[in-house]
Image (cartoon, rainbow over all chains, first blue to last red):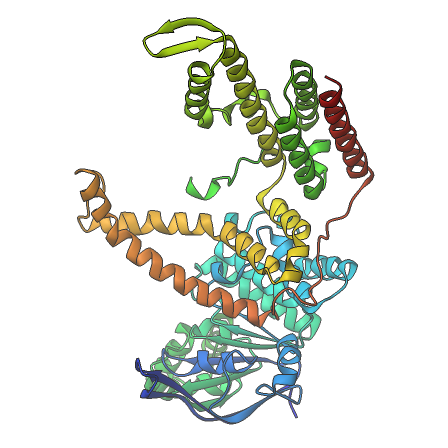
Length: 284
Length: 266
């Protein structure tokens, strides 16, 4: 049994009119079940409106499911009693780097989570030191967050979550507002945390390039899980992905086109190196 | 660069005064203000001046910066001095129409001016040597007792520090919106006051909407990081009194005693 378990999740956004009557319901998730193993790196892909962000917010009790249950380390998220334990266990990083940094100085922001948890002062400092080290932002610890680049801000936000010592981190499109450099920076940091600290990562994104190195890729569409497997398995189904309005990495697309033109290539080529090797083998 | 703006008038330099606990500085400022209001003779003012000069020297802030703070009170100063000069009854020096200047008026106006100047300089030392964050922390801790009677001290200080964090972001955003509206033909410069005020509407509406959106996001991010008010919260940088603070308290008490003593004797 995994650290994150979603059982038959349903979520409705309900719009109320002025008299507080239900005006309109919008089903964002309809029956999502997912079991995520501790220590794994799972990416959730989906187009706008696929329900992936809603799914992320259900993971640490920011939204409560309309029906179904989320278990984080066997605690129910809609259980008042465990709400804070759930949030301690599953940290969350949001899309907009500016709107999630609370402190006026980098190190103070990283300390915000532990402060809220009532961690003793000396231990807060230890945790802050370690977290900043882990995301490689120690050099900026005394700076104002306003002077950092987007990628750096997002790394500070990740450090802020790390300082709470969570067992898994949910990242809700952490790179959507960043430039390519910042994006690479953040993705590298997340991978390092996953490998070195053994933290379970749930990365929600719509950039294909970011999910290539994941252990598992889940594709969502219309509030349901439509594909689930290793990156190789998922990306070998190019036509299906296109149906869900998702692009495949350029190399994969090229390999797919070559294959359809009659070349004998394996399915699910994800990196340029792989394709080069395959082609070199063919030519020699 | 808009993002480089400094808030308040903090002067970054390392001095004893800068390293002092904000609560000590708040207390010192209060003592100083009280002492100015009980002062009524030349000797007492000299003592107050000496105390001020010592404090300025200890803060290592150039006098230039101190004096800058006085600019804002020039008008107030002129008005109160001239009122005191001409409207105090006593031995007349000369008379123009119904206005007469008296010896008592001169003395009173002089003391008044000195008192005001000292007052502003004294509180400027506090703001020049303390970062807004530190000041908020100090206020939260010193006013903590108000929490017992239901004043949300922690919440107010949290709001203040969040406001400080977001001011530069919102300024930058204002700049962006302004440019976007100007690109679409908005005119913020010409016209009279009313027209200018009207021109601000297309600037303020998007700014407010975005501020509210940011607030929702921030609230969500704070909750996700287990924020649930001030109860059970620990501090990463708790305020702690050092030897220098104890000395400063002692000096303040001594100073206040001397001032009260001088007032009683003279």
